Image (cartoon, rainbow, N blue to C red; front, side):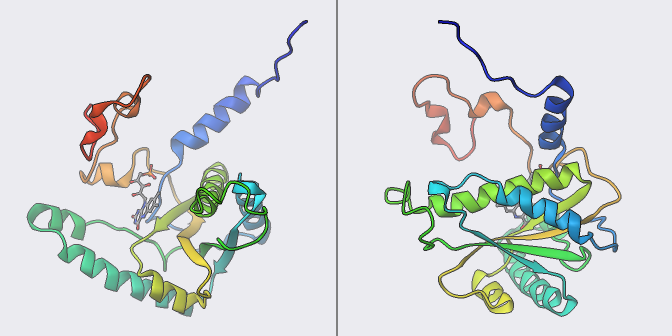
Length: 229
Ligand SMILES: Cc1cc2c(cc1C)N(C[C@H](O)[C@H](O)[C@H](O)COP(=O)(O)O)c1[nH]c(=O)[nH]c(=O)c1N2
């Protein structure tokens, strides 16, 4: 019997997908004040909503935050958390941390909080009995979809996790059974950096693929916190 294989994308389409993956950046600076048009924001949210999810549960929920007063509240929550983070470092690392820009909450005209309804009955528990955390993982898949689509649209996205979740809940009136997963800053940017900000700041470097790849059984190189290169 003759086997047929599904066809992939043509070369330019493939290149575009890999390019979005390679050139996606976490953006914290250079946001332009012009708001994202509703249709474009809608396309990004559709991309997120197309993500895979455990049991087809689609547990992500999107809160678009445009109001300056709310962004100011969240920004204050960031400042307080960031002060504590700074205090946890010493010496050169502390100086380096102090010099980094780690959010664009006020500069980006729209923020987006992606939350997860882990208790939603959609999906009828398929895949979740053994790993309940897969609800959150599904929400993260939605975030990544949006991040890549945004890069293709020329929209910068920055993930801010330097926020006390309890305070973020209060600021956005998120009920107790809903988990805040990501707080994102979104906007047009003047340019995308070619390398991660943390690399350019000398904070951390990317490791090569081979250092995280084991083709056979478990490899002791993962016993340390950071893989050996
Ligand atoms: C879950 C999670 C949480 C955060 C991040 C990422 C992710 C995945 N990153 C961005 C992070 O620093 C960045 O992705 C890496 O440094 C790699 O850079 P590129 O994303 O490739 O530009 C991030 N960056 C930042 O400036 N402030 C932050 O609070 C966070 N938080």
